[in-house]
Amino acid sequence: MLFKKKADVEGTKRFAVKLTEQLPELGQVTILVDTTTGVNYIQTWVGTSGGITPLIDANGDVVVDNVSPHQ
Image (cartoon, rainbow, N blue to C red):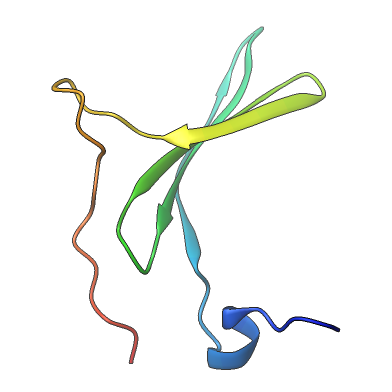
């Protein structure tokens, strides 16, 4: 392998799944959390395509969770 992923080197995963929902007749929505920065992302799957974007709160700010440094 040309590049080693950080998870392969340190044994930790960069992203964690916070929530997954199936929406009838629409597709799947997943909330991912970057375990390094705490930034939340929303990932969608509709049919055979999908997308990902930062999750925004009611004030238009990016949702960020408190994260502790990896040991």
